[in-house]
Length: 195
Image: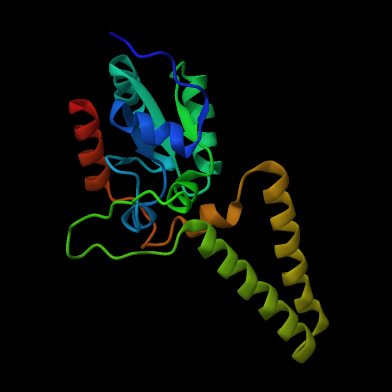
């Protein structure tokens, strides 16, 4: 018996009520995933979704797929990509941030080496703020042209807000602590095939 089609976006209470009937895919980086994820969520980082398409398609034959991230922006992008491939999926409105704010538990890996990392949005805010302050300080102390660094960051943030993309997040995602590990993806895909 197949479940009714999942809406394109679900709120936390809807997910809580259906969680055990959903295949949950967390598209954040492994570091973010390790800092806390929905129970049963599989970590398939956004930049690895294309590799996982056959397995995600197969999972939709067994039930509904929910894609999550920290706030919902990356999961919306993943859902669009999946829709382009004819794969239906929903996103959690507000992401894991909304899930935690509603008082629901986030699971963390039991591995002793797993360490909590800053979420990508926090990393972007920290980096953008640091670069703006640095540009202003160097502009006052060294040469006024350094203030262009602050202006460039401000322009990038406006562009990011208007387009729903973030170049800084893409760059930060390439840092070693944010990079997906192939073994983690392989394990998630194996679990996805078996779910």
